[in-house]
Picture 1 (tube, rainbow, N blue to C red):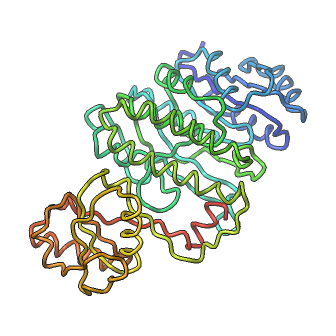
Picture 2 (picture 1 turned 90 degrees about the vertical axis):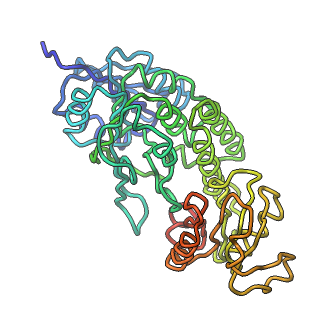
Picture 3 (picture 1 turned 90 degrees about the horizontal axis):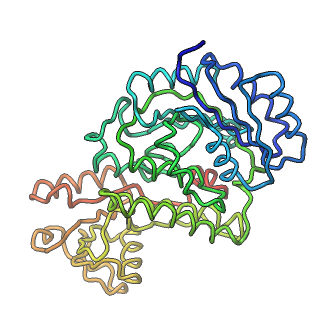
Length: 410
């Protein structure tokens, strides 16, 4: 009898007959064979229900659960309840995995005994200009072991996002490219609201990671996600925004209790904003003109009611000024630019940058588009004794980039 630990592989299935066999073959042929394969037929009507039973007849490791259609969250919960192994993995029935994925993940899990092992995935058939898109397990954190002392504010400040490029994840939110201890995963997945369709992975992954005691980030990228425009996560109606609020509340409830709630809540605000923008056009088919430049003030980096110096009075600075003036989110104590006096119509008095040292402020926001110029400004501010922690410059939200439009589905 094989003494190696067992992995329960949970596969929800709903009307993907054209993909399901490839998925199953990739799981059945895994070089790590100690598997409990739990297939949840979520009310399929295209023949998948019969394919499930056919596979169960030829491999004793397979358990099949037939249920009325309840959605992917409901199906995964059913699989998690039925799982008997100490370790859990997920595969979507229209995806497939490299044949040594579980051998590699379990090798790491056994060596380090962490709560979760994180790897990356590959988006197949994404968009014509980028048909194969590799998403690492993390785009910013080092590869290796993280114990409790390593899971600090610096780590969680980049839990969801690494930079201001669209989809530049800190940690990939995909459920399928990870291996979990069931005891760690179970409480966070079982609390996910079954009404959530788009973002259900995130509703579990990020709250769970905000509370783990240890994890391992690997450089593996062995899970293949098949991008389909007809999948449920790409079909939205007007109730989408109600479900988005449910998703936000689900994550917020956990984040607010964390000792790192400040940085986590900032990222959640951006996450919800991007989910909103991504689907606004697809639901209502609004004739949005995305050829104009649009800049969003970095609300997730600036605390409400902060006193700020706005450095820059060009297009970005004007946009930031109007947003703050309209929202009263924070207080602009000084607006600085070399070309002082250029914004009379905005009602803001522009002062020379040399006057910044006299201001009482919490942050300096560098409202400049050019990366090189922004670095020069930052260096000058450091030279006059401004703390680096008070200086903020970030990649802007610029929705006229073709790559961003394509990624967001416009």
